[in-house]
Amino acid sequence: MIKLHPQLEKDSIALGEFSLCALLLINDSNYPWFILLPNRENVKEIHQLASKDQQQLMVESMVFSRCLELVFHPDKLNIAALGNVVPQLHIHHIARFIDDASWPTPVWGAAPAIPYTNEQINTIKNQLVNYFSSQPEQLFRPL
Image (cartoon, rainbow, N blue to C red; front, side, top):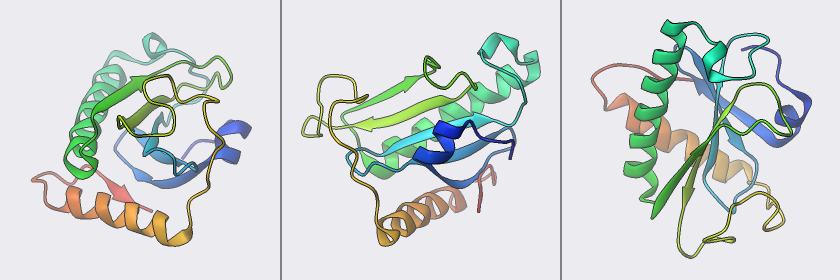
């Protein structure tokens, strides 16, 4: 995995990797909030990736989005690449629920972060591993 921006390093937990992207979990149990981080240096925008990497990013984002729907059953998925605070290209994938801490507003700064316990982190890892192990292609490698 490439070197993380200091803010991502502070706020996230590495869970595994796809062929292009690392998968991070934002350490805030208010929401199932994940980051896909392309393993490419000095990239701020999707269009700066090589065409093949752009396509692979979309594949991994769609595959992971389907996983979130089937594992967490959210009311809505929020997927975004903002980069105003962290310029390193990263794609947020947030499972949202009508009863979550900030519904229907954006999650950024809406509620104080509640760190995950080790047990909660292990549960999420196991859910992801179980989901991806049932898929025909092994796209995800847990850490």
